[in-house]
Image (cartoon, rainbow, N blue to C red; front, top):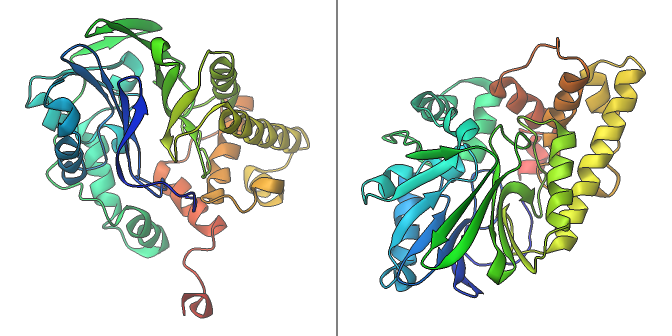
Amino acid sequence: MSSLDYAKGLHDLGDGCHAWMLPDGSWGWSNAGLITGSGTSLLVDTLFDLALTREMLAGITPVTATNPIATLVNTHSDGDHVFGNELLAERDVEIIASAAAAELMTQEAVDALANIKKIDGPTGDFARHIFGPFDFEGITATGPDRTFEGELTLDVGGREVHLIQVGPAHTAGDVIVHVPDARLLYSGDILFVGGTPIAWAGPIDRWIAALERILDMDLVTILPGHGPVSGKTEVAEMREYLVHVQEQARKRFEEGLSVDDAIASIDLGRWADLPEHGRLAQNVINVYQQLDPSMERPERLTVLGRIAQLEGFPAKKEEQV
């Protein structure tokens, strides 16, 4: 992702709120949150594999020893935010997610990622490049005990925590977690900082609306799904990226360009050097799908191949020296 300087591990965000952060925020290196109340706490998301999640649970014991985790909220269904869920279920922690996210938290999703690292060819090479550090073997998909739609207010040791469903956007069931008395938000992957967002579900219109909703909230601190602790400046910047991509893709659709020609011809301007810039491929595909619902939806494996090509992977031999 980015070279933005932030450290791995537990961060005190103030007012009884914490973050567990995994630099550099690129594929799979995600953030989790911890909200404490009187003698209890709520965990926001787990991590991409069991080893990382065990490390996090051990690392947050200075907080959870006196405020044990009673609730886990998953902000969405992507593996880097849910694959450690079983370790919380073993502790009888209640798991909550949106109903749309719950439908996607399947063993099939776990197995698909494990298998993608085993395929031959350039796409498999790219998958091993981005997912190589993570161990997907032996993970048991563990979905929520409770689901909701719209909004849900929780009591965490005497303080209110608001769950707000803003998906489909990044994924089908995105949820943001608002702690009003701390003026703090755990955004999940509604916000990427220092890297390129990717619209697996969309529509991008709805994602833009989610970012605008965040901009209208009384907030000082925002923990993104990936990247360093942020504020509204970073939210506004990501909104501008999505607006730019949507406008450029729609223009090319109306001009009759194929999706491949559209992807190849879009100038990302000031975002051209943003890490994971190849995710433009899926973002353009998403806009085209919204404008033409009959368009065939490529599998994620195919999309990964397009992203790899845009990012020049594998690098030429002289670039690998």
